[in-house]
Amino acid sequence: MTARSSSETTRVIPEATVARLPVYLRALTALAEGGIRTCSSEDLATAAGVNSAKLRKDLSYLGSYGTRGVGYDVDYLRYQIAREIGVTQDWPVVIVGIGNLGHALANYSGFRSRGFRVVALLDADAERTGEMVAGVAVRHFDDLETIAREHAVAIGVIATPAAAAQDVADRMVAAGVTSILNFAPAVISVPEGVDVRKVDLSIELQILAYHEQRKAHGQARGEVDGVDGVDGVDGVAVDGVEVATVGGDS
Amino acid sequence: MTARSSSETTRVIPEATVARLPVYLRALTALAEGGIRTCSSEDLATAAGVNSAKLRKDLSYLGSYGTRGVGYDVDYLRYQIAREIGVTQDWPVVIVGIGNLGHALANYSGFRSRGFRVVALLDADAERTGEMVAGVAVRHFDDLETIAREHAVAIGVIATPAAAAQDVADRMVAAGVTSILNFAPAVISVPEGVDVRKVDLSIELQILAYHEQRKAHGQARGEVDGVDGVDGVDGVAVDGVEVATVGGDS
DNA sequence: CGCGATTTGTTCTCGCGTTCACAAACTCAT
DNA sequence: ATGAGTTTGTGAACGCGAGAACAAATCGCG
Ligand SMILES: NC(=O)c1ccc[n+]([C@@H]2O[C@H](COP(=O)([O-])OP(=O)(O)OC[C@H]3O[C@@H](n4cnc5c(N)ncnc54)[C@H](O)[C@@H]3O)[C@@H](O)[C@H]2O)c1
Ligand SMILES: NC(=O)c1ccc[n+]([C@@H]2O[C@H](COP(=O)([O-])OP(=O)(O)OC[C@H]3O[C@@H](n4cnc5c(N)ncnc54)[C@H](O)[C@@H]3O)[C@@H](O)[C@H]2O)c1
Image (cartoon, rainbow over all chains, first blue to last red; front, side, top):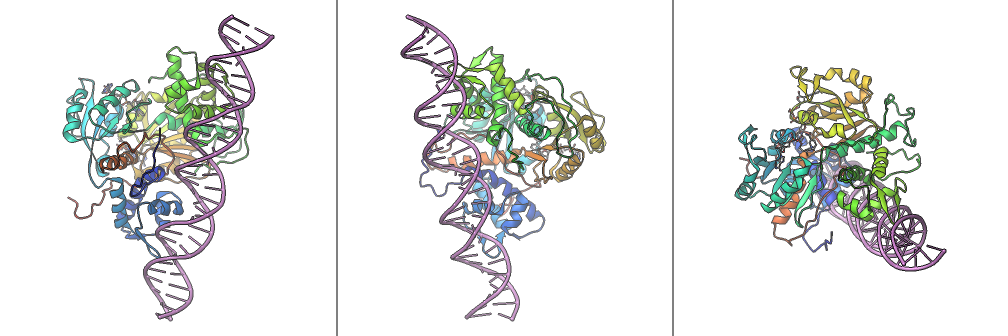
């Protein structure tokens, strides 16, 4: 699968580093807005919530943009990171599925301010087409191909029910989309060369629940037990045990 | 920054595995709904979108719940995973910040169906209090302490602007919340023993943009692989940002 | 009862990511 | 110019997770 023969490309930035660059970018922006012109790796690391050694190593993959004994020029570094990520240009984005979540996403100001422009809101429900959301008219899902081609859309967001996710993904790919951000709780498969990232609320909550359970009963079998140690936690009322069936998705 | 007490509990499940258990749980639920009673690791791995060896290794941390030569009993395994995660019980959750995103979250049916129950919607804006969202009345943020204590709330969701995130987190912690899911693009710091996970839309998009830019820049085709597995990276601050483009910003 | 087919659970190896630690490079004061 | 004080960039050690491979266990069937 991940053959990746690491060719002799100029620089190969580790995936873990790529995931942190946006964080550094945001921290730098915050510093710049605070009137700070230069900062040390320690300063920036604190603002970004990471270890300073890790920060320096991450930045070293981009090049040598700092000055020893001094630190980094905030604006300069910010531009370099933005350029590396690719957000110095504007990326057209389509959002498919304008329900509860789709509305929120469409209204999200963070899109435009960070290098992304919503060029279309699409929904399969004919009753929703024409509705104005955040100044953009909702159009029918069938227009995807036309719109995507016209605006050279490379990035698509899926906010439909899980059952529709795979179909939407297929049609996005057919329309030339090569990067997908999927909010639906479904595993979608795409051809080689297409990137998919998923954001899953329930998974995040379940991960928290796991640790929470650990905190509550230190290491009990799995049966309800008294609270142990951990201050601040009052007894968690638990009762009937029933596997969460239902599952309105997939 | 999971403290990880390391008090040598019976089994220590790797964090990477914990993050995948919910995926397996969902896949099992889908299989069960399809009337499937037993499945092999290969079947389940396919449904979950992972490698079968990885799946078996993950499950081995929970115990030996399969039968060699046969596979896994879907319902039994589902229960075991649900119990391990802690979603056989119902977790009370509070959502703070009932704006665009907060509304969507409140209306999200996946909450209830996966072991979580929204016990309160809170907002600092007095004009919003009293509004009914998904059958729950929005209450004032000041009621957090009372509500959290009353329902023994351990998990809180932050959907306020970034500027308010740290303050909200502090008050949640003071009210006994020990797990926080943060949607605001801000780095929040909490005391030892409190878990924070963040979901950051713009970071996800920027990661996609990076790879997209790579694809565009000639280079070798078929370079990028399928990306997945959202992982813990700590977030950062302040929104309402504007990427500085060197050489004039329109 | 034994044998082949099947599938799990585990061991082993490899690569990636994190962290430490330090030399190199730079500034500033004298 | 020189030395003291800073801070970067990176080599190296280390730990964790991914994946391949295989022995052990179970079933079906003659
Ligand atoms: N609401 C949340 O806070 C939330 C949180 C996490 C995940 N999710 C997930 O996001 C997805 C959307 O959630 P929601 O609450 O907005 O649901 P929703 O039902 O409110 O909206 C779904 C929208 O998708 C449209 N749609 C359905 N099939 C379509 C298709 N084939 N093509 C185009 N559009 C189609 C529907 O018309 C509807 O407008 C779901 O998969 C949900 O599980 C939602
Ligand atoms: N809308 C999205 O799709 C989206 C996506 C990703 C991230 N986010 C982030 O989620 C957060 C919320 O986004 P939104 O679009 O819902 O914003 P919003 O402005 O619509 O809603 C924010 C709500 O928080 C309330 N609030 C403000 N300060 C508060 C405080 N101290 N205590 C309690 N409540 C307070 C406000 O009254 C408002 O109702 C933001 O940080 C945003 O960056 C939003």
